[in-house]
Length: 256
Ligand code: NAD
Ligand code: ZN
Image (cartoon, rainbow, N blue to C red; front, top):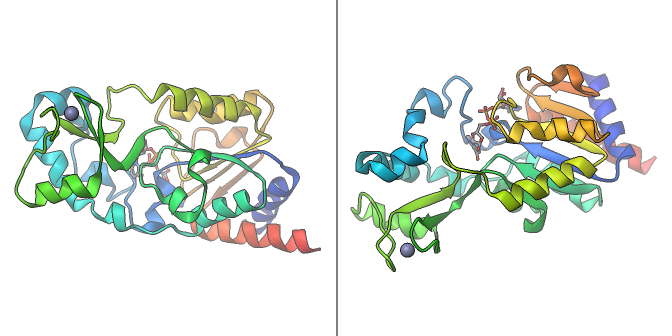
């Protein structure tokens, strides 16, 4: 493990264009549950409720989702943890090309990574979008209406259904973001996966694109992933602890 921390630090030192690819696992240390771990979201909610078809066709599903969004208020209050700060430090060191994230929690930006360097494949929970006129509203504004008793909020302008501005099952990923994320993956020199099981596609193809184009690949995750055998460095453990040690090592070598 100590050796692997040193190897990842060395890879970072040798690299100039790093893409950090993150999943729900990096935010568990900020108190946001991931989907697939025990106690994760899928053990408490029905994934069927998160299809776009169901959301648009069932009033009951919409009520459930808004109820859950109120409960998920913690998402708005959540604070970045050492993994988010490590990524922001890579930016300050001039090594970060970009972050490609499956997360919708806005924590990379809160930690100091500039917005134009964060590619969000699944949207951002801070926003709500009208399915009719596509106007966007800040989430707290809409949640306030739910708390005041409006079980299913509607667009104040065109009365259409409002939807959290995140990608539901059955919905396409934002095309421009995806295309740019693939281009970045294909032109980086180091691709670091942190906190993702790498099972949700097409996001999970990203490390394969990077590797095929010649980048080195590193994975930091609590549990094994399907790509562990194809990487230069794999470290299993808590991302926050590992990335703290990796960045200490990067700083230490930088001063020598
Ligand atoms: P996932 O739930 O499938 O997997 C998370 C992975 O992180 C697991 O392999 C787990 O072992 C690992 N993990 C958990 N805690 C960790 C820690 N402290 N350190 C290192 N690894 C840790 O999540 P996924 O692969 O990102 O895909 C699921 C989808 O869920 C994504 O599309 C994402 O949009 C969405 N999601 C987002 C959030 C968020 O924004 N924070 C939260 C839940 C789900
Ligand atoms: Zn509207």
